[in-house]
Amino acid sequence: MALSRAEKEQEVLKLNDNLKNSEMVVVTHYAGTNVKDMTRLRTELRENGASFKVTKNTLAKLAIKGTQFEYLEDFLSGPTGIAFSADPVAAAKVTQKFADDHKKFVILGGGLGKEVLDVAGVEALSKLPSLDELRGKLVGLLQAPATKVAGVIQAPASQLARVVGAYAATGE
Image (cartoon, rainbow, N blue to C red):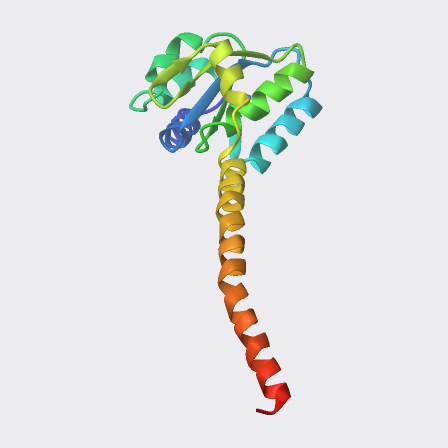
């Protein structure tokens, strides 16, 4: 089904807006990947705060104009799909895992901010912990010392309470 000119303009504006609000973009070829698997990919990306868009390359080339990802124009040929996320690793993590499991799904490269990434760069980035994982580790690190500090602070108070209790028990 062919898109009208107005629909194409809307598509370009929406993709442009998504790219402007993203830190990470992964460009892929999806030829030979079935609809069921693509739906699974989209679902997993959405659960991780990322999105996936299949679009005509001419529209994608128009959409990347005015974004920090203009350098990705060379990747836009063939059956292209674009994964993007505000999280610097979410799109890379999910697409790399999917590509490992589905040999017909090929990562061409991507971009992290203004840095162009080759396939190896996307793979390396996919191995880093996500923002949520880093936050969890940081909270764990912060809570451990706080628990110890609370224990140290409570110890003298509990000892003082025992001494006062023992003194009161003697009736003096």
